[in-house]
Length: 304
Image (tube, rainbow, N blue to C red):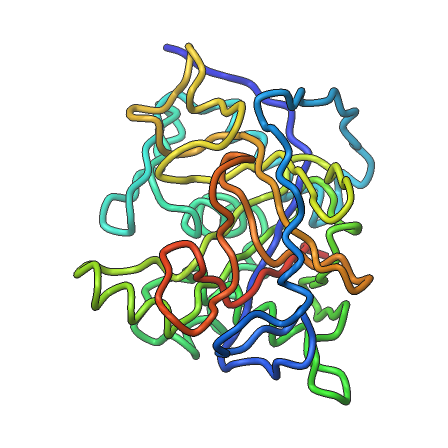
């Protein structure tokens, strides 16, 4: 059996939105026909073929904290991983004896990691997510986002606070603060999802949930981060594409590099991303259907 062992530096980013946010800043996009001026500044893309993943020293401090427990559980899955594949709820498999882990992005983070290692954190998340999305049997990406966005709250002008927390989670928006083991959550715009379903004649995902597996490498208005997730395909320099991969078809649980575009108003909030460092940006919803412009927002969260 082929098993791979990975060194992880963690990042958890999350995206929330029960309702549209007031379009008064680049960080709180709304349903509008054009981007806010901050989003019109598209950074020059780096040539991802020359990107060399740096050696990063893992921070093992705080192992007994909720964040440390979360990272340890995620690492244990990677160490034990023998067979993996991307499947939605009905195809879920977690067989630790054989090292088989089959699920989707939110299921991997929520069920396989948080629920197993931090049950009270999971229960609070699940109860809130279900209140907003009663037809979901467990927290999906939009449930993660809505829960964390509620924790973040708004300032007096209606914009997202830079930081917020409750008993279980610290939520923030700046890429500068990301550490290994933080959760990064992307939520897709609901109007985009409806147009996608009408035009493509198939269901649309509610977003993406992933874990930062390194500290961000920030150059200008872009951040490159090693990501642990469960996806339908891998990222750049990804374990799912390696010779000894545990993946059955290039999908499932793995670690690779992604790139995020950051707001240029001093807050460094991620608002778009490259799945593999190059190619199309997945960006904010502009008001008319575009396959790649689909996001409502991105948030980051850390168990406390």
